[in-house]
Image (cartoon, rainbow, N blue to C red; front, side, top):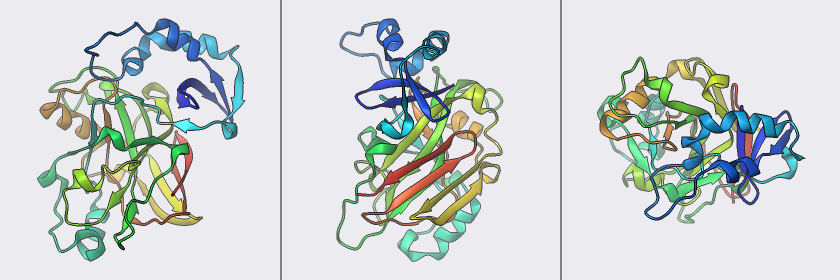
Length: 285
């Protein structure tokens, strides 16, 4: 199943070039909450129970063309956004060679850095676009990644069982300003985490170990790689994260970007694509 969030927080089931509005199911079935609110995303936590009702409703629900809607992040309320740095060897090599990326600092393997966190306030959807924040000549780069959302609470899960905790997958753009500051700062500015265009449930997506991902800017190919070249597999990213954090429904994990990162500027149009998910177009403003 492909599920999107769009317009004024509507929930849709995507089929072909159309979206069926199933918001009523979500409003009727999600339990009311009182402060203090439970951590995580209530929709993702209830997704397994909601799916049969969403499928039934989608058969007769009003439909719109995808081209006519505004796509928001498919995950509305992630408790954490966890990201994997330098998780492709060729990206490590380009980072070591390009001072515009490394700023004179040593670039090592992900084994040394482990994971980092991004601010939830950086989260946007495909139609909301990316904002350039600095006019001082600093590079703002695109980084396309396979992203996932955790579907149930996970703590100290094994590598073998890690993918059982994934609710679904989507395209992720981990936008970054190059500089000497910590990653969590440079990658957490408003609009610097783009998720979309929709969530593909894990059962439909299948094995994430051999997935092509790519991005072009203004029609120029930039990044084009495959998840089989990840240093830490998708399962290892989930398992490792669960050793340090309690993963909760709605937590997002970005699995790392391949070689080909490059600057973006106002007016650019990014087109990102991942096998079994589709493509999304994101404007730079």
